[in-house]
Length: 160
Image (cartoon, rainbow, N blue to C red; front, side, top):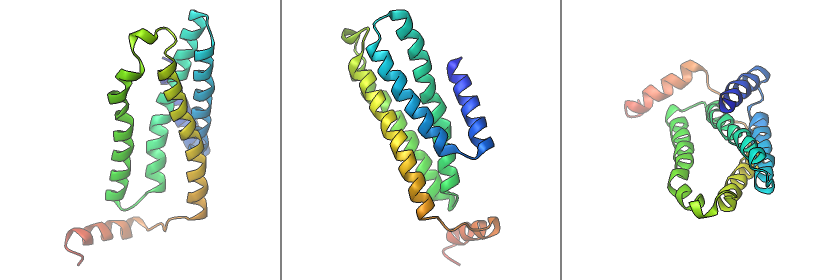
């Protein structure tokens, strides 16, 4: 339920205020703080509650990152599709290495798993701000919808 609140709330507010990168940095920064708290707290009930809220920040960041990429890479569609596929593949790679980060022998602290998750959220927090600055400093040329469609159709026909 916490993840649903994070996803719907953060995506709605980010769209309303046109501040996707700020919400990405804010949520991932909050996630870092919450995961640090999870690893330092010794009370199991508190750790459980903090874990729910901490993982909610991850679920909130995921759709924001994908929609932000769609905004900053508007055309061509192939470039945008590759960028989103790259984001998905990096995110899904966690399914491969996660089995080694969360072994039962580390229970209930799971220091390696929480440290890795905290690190990734920290990287996301900083890189969102850096990329926002870069996108502002080096803006992309925005084509009109007709120009973008015309360019894509021209590319398929061999550059005619």
